[in-house]
Image 1 (cartoon, rainbow, N blue to C red):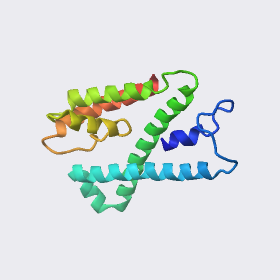
Image 2 (cartoon, rainbow, N blue to C red; image 1 turned 120 degrees about the horizontal axis):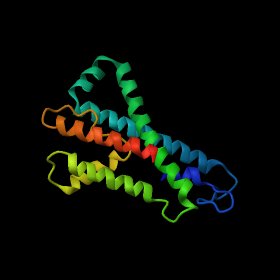
Image 3 (cartoon, rainbow, N blue to C red; image 1 turned 30 degrees about the vertical axis):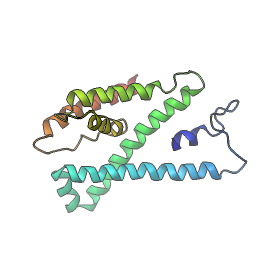
Length: 170
């Protein structure tokens, strides 16, 4: 929402989605700062999750600060690109079509279907929905190496990668 508000301040020129309250650029600057803090926090959260779900990643991160930095940059860039893609679609479609939110909704439904089909033996729908939301913006299954979850994680990770690549194409 922050990035959406940032990109839509006085855009499009004739009929802006978000109207600036005054001539000051303070709103835009604050939204930019808050947006980047949120995106970097998401990347760091994914870094921590990878550290906790993968022994191999944890060993590498303990051995090398550089590996942790590169891995954190990878996860942050993953979130940034997916968020920018979704927000760009919503901003560019908002004034042209009434269904400007549909690409995000379809992506969520596809992600939820993949998590339900290939997500392993999790029994509750709430857990599957809870995993599907962050999977819109990052592949949370990518670095799971638990012997009990490895096969399901690799299968769903492969499917999510294909879905994300197809999202870019279509």
